[in-house]
Amino acid sequence: MPLPQPDDLTSLVLRTDFGDDSAWDAVRAALDVAGDHPHATYVSELRFAGREVRALVDEETAADEGDRIGEVFLADATTMNDPGHPLLAVDLSGEPGRTFRVPARWFPDISANLSIANMDFAEYADAADGSGTFHGFDEG
Image (cartoon, rainbow, N blue to C red; front, side, top):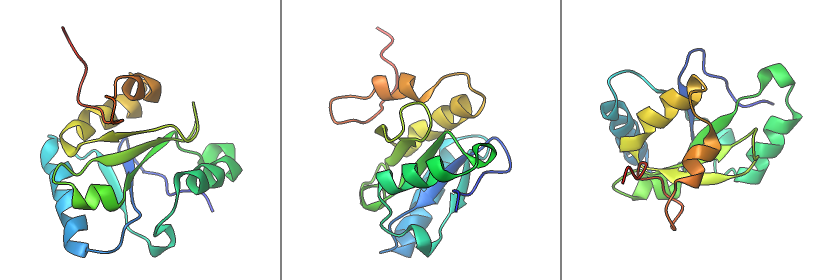
């Protein structure tokens, strides 16, 4: 079964950790307040509980070409427990399985640029720090 597809230019935020509903509410609130416009399509379905990156990549690869999405943002245990709510960004097309973390404050910019193909996943992943987290582009 293919991953759900957003009906608009938002990015798919997929919940994979179901240990704390209030943490999920906090993640959504942090993402919503980070931008001026909606940037996320939230999916909270138990079939994705604990789903690993490789399984998501395989599922998307098996889907019909017209049903595929380019990337997904996972709300996993790290996202739920870290105060910055860093989502795990997963590339599903260019370099399937490549990941980086994106704190909630950076999510709207990344979502918007990926949605309109202004930038690609690799540009953000390449700019991630040694911990694999994107903290913006170094301008100097």
